[in-house]
Image 1 (spheres, one colour):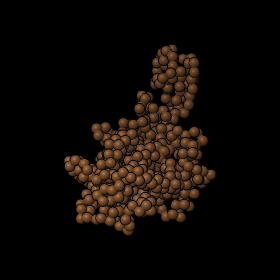
Image 2 (cartoon, chains in turn red, cyan; image 1 turned 180 degrees about the vertical axis):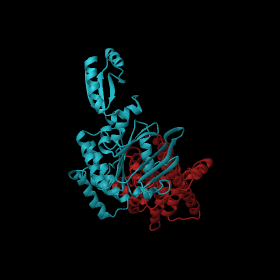
Image 3 (cartoon, helix red, strand yellow; image 1 turned 90 degrees about the vertical axis):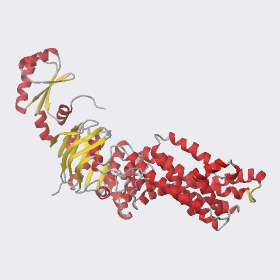
Image 4 (tube, helix red, strand yellow; image 1 turned 90 degrees about the horizontal axis):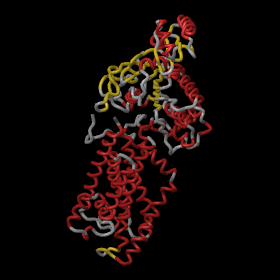
Length: 261
Length: 304
């Protein structure tokens, strides 16, 4: 009997679940395409140009350029996280889609893996839509910033895995508000996004480095969009890869425990 | 010919509650096999074990000659499942529901499209082809689910209460389709609460209660063995009860009616006698049905 730390057996059929979500997404592209576009513009104007007028620059970098990678990183986080919490919960509980799928050759492991891959894909789509906007404003440095696209997938996978763990233990859809407001919202503010981590007290810096996934995503994103890669990118990347692997596998096991009785 | 499903000493526990308690049955090729029983009898759990979505606790189970624990994907590839709950995909049209479901079975695009249209025709939903599923009536949704269960041309069709909540017209249509499928050589396993449905459709059936199989047989056999041929029903009153006791007729009291089990020959005599001597307010004689067997075996206590 598999337990929550066993390695789940995932097959290529997971992509069929991914494909189903992709088809629905593409069919309703109007509602899916504009939010990231608008979001990028809103951030640029409100924070970049608004606050940027006073802040001017941080560590010699124009403020808008400083927050541009954070806008991308937060978008990666939000799109994967909300897709694999509310989106997956609706498909699991209200639409009973997972029940319908596991009556076919798909296993529950395939279904959840497909959902995670789809969550990460949404992050990529967000980055792909936002990047040209940021490039048009000249706040990201091409071509290195293009690496934000594959990074969006890995970062997205990490947040999808974390989100799916919450989904697997959430008693109802309302209780998903807790991680959304107590984890995601603070993280969007305190992960070196709109001001450097070094402005916080030392122990908070350590906490952010040790526990907040977004910190590492923002760090890599910033190195890419500012064309200022340092060797620490390896540490950030390793952190994300390890956490993504652990939470994705754990979430599949937790979902199986929830759904297969 | 090997049996389609073989279960021996099949058990399923949920923690400390025993849902299925060591049952044994076989389903043969081409038959319609029924699971009957009150709520909580273990029918749905048994179906879930057959459809490889719930692992058994112990015992042996073979579906299409394979073990659900070892080859779930291979079994499910050849299975059609109609669940109790309607779980159509609300993000798709009727056609989309069939087409995208086909994709889960690796059915090639062209074939999936062709098959989806054929099946819409089969369940008489062709004019609803491009309609969103939430716009369908309850009966249409059940028909679409039946169609969805057929996209992979299954060797074995599993239906959990296929006509639940449907009007008589819709039920008759589903029955007709199931008989068509049987005529084409399909094996069908179904659970139902509707005893008339079981009596009409099932070649063989089992009645379950508290996780165990109480009886197994053809509907006619079961009626003959457990309920006799004819039932004489008399409206209850103290006088009637006293009179019947005096006549030494064995009877069973159920609510406001008294039931007397009889054979075809004795029914007439008993009825005349009772009518003559006891002068009941109301009396009817009718053929025994599966419902009589069911209530006799599982009692009249209300289940959750």
